[in-house]
Length: 370
Image (cartoon, rainbow, N blue to C red; front, side, top):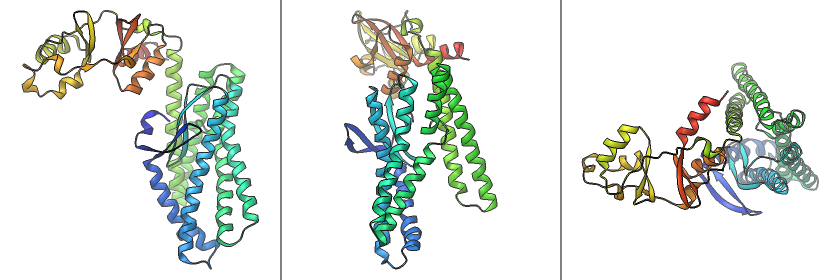
């Protein structure tokens, strides 16, 4: 899952030093699942219990299910840490959960164990809930029977070799180990993931027309998996094109700078319209102050352009928006996405020597991509 997908998520806890977040879509499935369990499942398996007990069981089952999903993701995270990978957060959303790892596994064996840890944790929980069910009765037995069953299904479902699911990552580890090419393995596993996703979509569509159960849900899951597999394929292709490319290789060295005393009108006429760039460094007597972009220009009412100066509109520079020339372009792109910037400055020994922009990276990918 990319960073954009984490928008609309709220932090609810911290476990093992990892922020646990809940996406707003989780509330939708939580409400739907609670209603289905309380109005259908529990009344059918325990028909003699009072009405309120069904809703209590439904709420508990939904909460424990999502706790199980969190446990599943924590298992991934625990093993990932053993291989010195950083886990930025775990997010629960409508289709389950995702652990946001920073960086890629160092080798196929690490990929395998990180991936398989999730399904194994679900099978473990299934066994724990099953053993607990054996020693209980009534509504409690029905609750633990459901949790044992759903965790077993969760573990099996995640072993489907459709990247980026756990089974798809296991497949990638196998291809990676055989071909010794991480990008090739990711692209192949993503292709398999897309085929499996299309199967879900068409099978769901077939189920809808034939009156079979769960057709719409299968189509939604298939659409989600296809989107994720496609995004993974594109990301892998992007990483392959940018592998080994340094910031110094594609940065802009001859920068057009603007003076803070200039008016917005002059900058628009003499710089934005003339050069076509999306932003310009603001420099005063050789000192870099910040960057003025089209966004800041548009924030100034047009009737005020002739009197508002650059010094009143530009974004002051911060140290975190810098990158050295020897850094990889992929790191620069990651920084721009994280900071929501279209361009960042390239510095060497506290001196600005150039700019690197998203448009510049995009042009490079367009020229050098497959």
